[in-house]
Amino acid sequence: MPEDTPNPFTFDIQFGENITLSSYDNHIVRHLSNMRGQFLDSEAYQRMLDEDDRLLYEVYEIHRPEVPGELLHGISIVHPGKVGDEYYMTKGHFHTVLDTAEVYYCLRGRGFMVMENPQGNWSVEPLRPQSVLYVPPCWAHRTVNTSAEEDLVTFFVYPGDAGHDYGSIEKQGYRKLVVERDGTPAIVDNPRWLPPEKR
Ligand SMILES: [Fe+2]
Image (cartoon, rainbow, N blue to C red; front, side):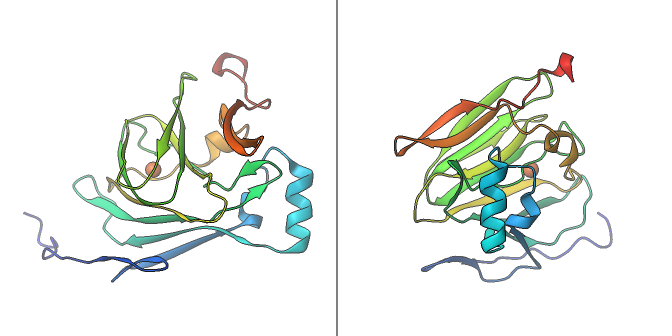
């Protein structure tokens, strides 16, 4: 056993008006300005940004060493809202160590996990309270909040050495977008997306 192995520990997920952790090490915030180029409607994006650089999502993390035997975990909170008709979402990423998986447990809200793999296959799974989502190795993943008023809150766990690769999916976005059509969420093709052989 490595000498720096920590003692076991416990913390609570506190359910109040907001869902919080009783202890955490990092609080990451992502504002609209951090999402340039991510939403399809760039004019709506710029109009909103000129008004206010609002908060789109937050992550509270428990710090663990980024090594294979560890598990990184915490909660992700995506706030409700839209840019044009596209719902607020996380940037999303592949893991740098591509063949590493992740588990999400939905605590509150409603939305989707939008996923795709390097071969261009896609999957969009619903998230609702008490649902557990397994993201297999090699699948990029992004959380989308489709509620008009409620946060989408998930607890996540992934391997310590996984890392985050934002760049490769950032250029053209995901194959599928989640937008509002006639008042309800719809999964539509991303017109900017190109199949792997055409990139
Ligand atoms: Fe991940």
